[in-house]
Image (tube, rainbow, N blue to C red; front, side):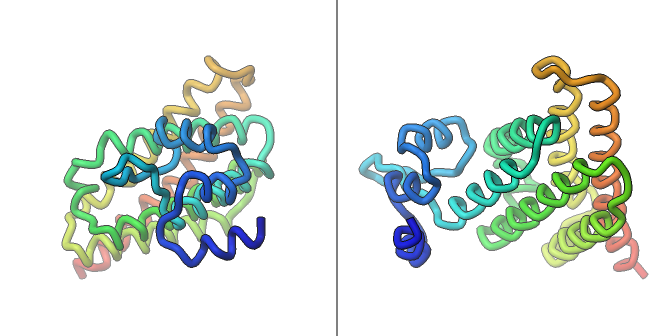
Length: 213
């Protein structure tokens, strides 16, 4: 496996067989993930699936984080990640998303991965986590600075975060319907999600406010 990863890492795109070997799954499983939008895929003119190495690395890291999560957090994260990918595909023509070029989109994906990692850590704590909130604020500032460089108004800079927030909260709200989750546990989960995302959004607004001065 290590040899395969080393060889793949030097390529921008790989076949479904190579990608499946890297992730340690059967190609049929990877094909299903691609068909449901859980991992991006490109079709060649000949109809062959190709996967970006950056997407494979991201997906592998998400799976690693899910393995260390447990219980309610893991159920929520699995569903939230899957839903977010589907929503991005259905909203790709929205101006707040289409305005970004491929470099900016990759940067947004990296910020999203970092934010999701922080979220998993934060919701796993029963209380505290101020250092994680500070990291979330830093992500918000990075997002805002990138949006400002593209001359996006604050409304559009916030739309991307609100889209992300709506997806995460919506999944949490419906957890009791799809899993045996106690109401008090779900309430705590929602509060933790909102607290961290509030930190991100306030940081975005602060950067825009500072830019006006």
